[in-house]
Length: 195
Image 1 (spheres, helix red, strand yellow):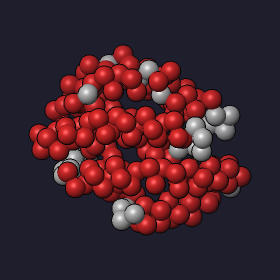
Image 2 (image 1 turned 180 degrees about the vertical axis):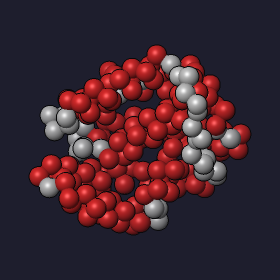
Image 3 (image 1 turned 60 degrees about the vertical axis):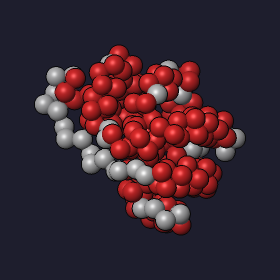
């Protein structure tokens, strides 16, 4: 994959969506993942390190995909490399993913237009890239397309339920950074096409 961070964001979005959509879709409802409490310091650190992790992980992820297609048993070794990358910047993979999920959840709740743009296939280069990747099996693409369609059709319910999951303290912490987050997401999207 050309941009591992975009993938983390995409997976975070889909994971958050699955938790938020379950009750809306008539399911019993799943317990949402524990929400990380964000501070201005955590947000500044995350926004500062995100471009570095994105750039370094791009080459790593491309090599990993090619390697895993030849030998799927190497997945654990690749995960160790990914963990080492995040550790280099003072994160665990899980910690980074949790903070990214919390950041993106608050960002979308505070800026629903940004969420709508993510659900537009033409505005989502990561989704387009995944759907056009010949190495991704057709069944997996069909599942992603179905989930993406469900998110588009139920965006109002998702945002409402996501809003119930985002703490007031996270909203307050993220609000001053809305323009910075938007600028960074656009920048990473453009840069990822060069990686």
